Length: 166
Image (tube, rainbow, N blue to C red; front, side, top):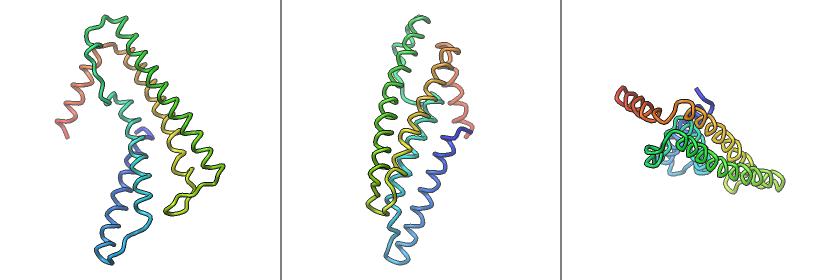
């Protein structure tokens, strides 16, 4: 299993546990845990970023392949490379600005409003998972270029089979 898969599963599990515990305590005592909202929001963001990285690697993000389907092989390869470069530019910006933001939060010793924890604990995951997504995008590009344009249909068939099995 990839680290992002474990991270996403852990985040989802913790969200479920925290939410369930909060509901039980709220019904039993008419009070709720103060920390649950702050942690839940953080874990949802973590889950989203880790899940996006997993989806990139599995080629599960939405992609309009109309142009790809009609291009000859050399142009198809060019489109795949241009797509990858565009994604890497966006992720590079996410890493740069997320890293700058995390560093500023660390330097300013900013604390979260709910629990008073250092904000950089929450923010550092943005550049880290941005790098993971960029790495997965490069892996996906290499795989697609090796397998060729017909690999899309094979991937779709494999996903359909796994959906029917589960």
